[in-house]
Length: 278
Image 1 (cartoon, rainbow, N blue to C red):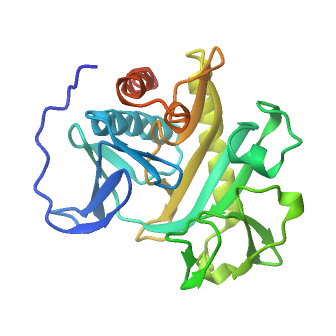
Image 2: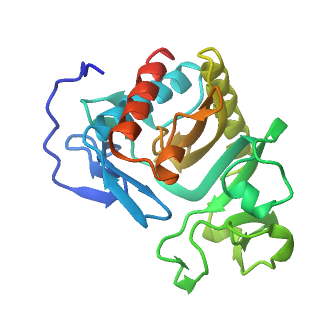
């Protein structure tokens, strides 16, 4: 795919944080903004499998920029401001909410592990929303937990945690986390849920017009310096499951063992297709 963003990467000296597939820097001119730089890395199995695919960063930035441009046009609040160059985009500086919202139209992935009696690919009439607490190194606020990114159910104002990889009916919660440890008092879970549904509906329709099914996706949220809840982080080909004629166009092929050029070809196709969103 031809890259039309030839501008060189800006000189960024102050790194805020680095994740598996991106680095976030302080904006060199505006403290209310950040620069998000994609990496060529792709991971699976909580980072157990990692590969570097040359050019993936460009494709990830292209996809994210196209997706967030569409969401902005639809009036959905996001942190995205503009693409800067091939691998970087500018966004509002947010305090990230440590929750991952997963919207599911089909029963795939970890949902089947928690609900083994559900048929793979079963379609939900209304997209199903799930919450996962974002954790690292199997710890939450210094407390050891058995698995990162646990399923989080809300009970009596607390987030009750379960392993995401085992049948839910056979589990007891391993930790109850007070709401105050996860969300500021003024942030509404209802608001987050409404925005997540709008994001999914918008992207599901956009993909449907291109003959692609959006099976599920993850969405992350942040809080701006003004206290506004916005869709943040990235939405790229690592963020969802896309099916075309029953075949995956997304990261699932990497999880299943495919690597290298085959994965890059799919990411290139998805980036090209999302350019038709805008």
